[in-house]
Length: 89
Image (cartoon, rainbow, N blue to C red; front, top):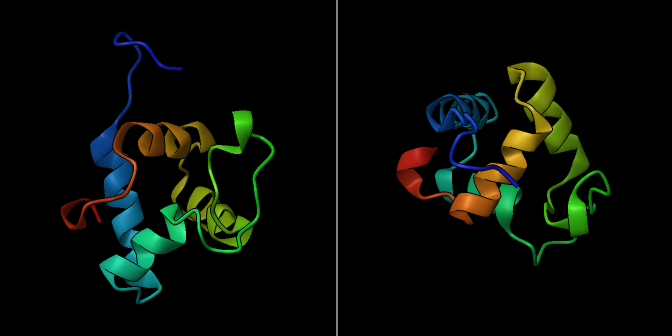
């Protein structure tokens, strides 16, 4: 869990997610579902506590490798904001 003193560059993470969405021609709604919809049949990532992040493993790898986003940033993004609003992506 991050404290107020920890740094978290929300703008950078949001920008990188937007680039990924555009590169793969997703609509905002589709992309938000891919990242954050727990009802979809997706891989549970054991690396995170309590399996809190549920996104397709292939998608997570693309996000992290191509845009150098830390896995912890994805988790914090979700914990803080739940579902992405359209202006973020």
